Amino acid sequence: MAKKTTLGSALQTARKARGLSQEAFSDVSSRTYLSTLERGLKSPTLKKLEELCEVLDLHPLTLLLLSYTSNQKQARELAEKILDEAESIRTQKAKAPNSN
Image 1 (cartoon, rainbow, N blue to C red):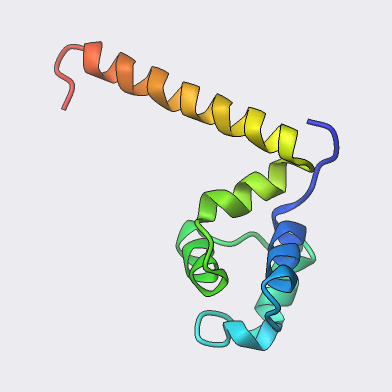
Image 2 (image 1 turned 120 degrees about the vertical axis):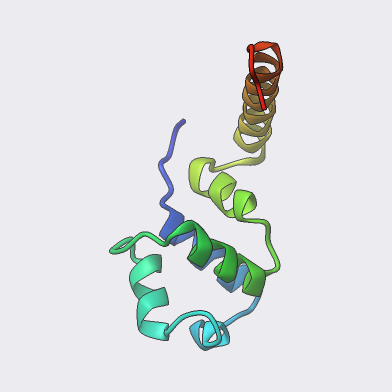
């Protein structure tokens, strides 16, 4: 991975791309908290990430993908790697004895 983008900067980029102010998140977060997330001073829980992404109308994985990639090529490569890893785990689980 070339450039390391933080979750906070990806959140800010997505928010601005959607034309939303920090106040638009008032039902799920205070403006102060959102600002600390965007500046990378705090990290959200998965539940909070889901809530923020609902406001953004994005899947949480999309925001994470933006955090780890800086261009379309990297995003496609990472998405493919994620799919391969998930399939490998599912396959191993299915082969494991006593898998539930």
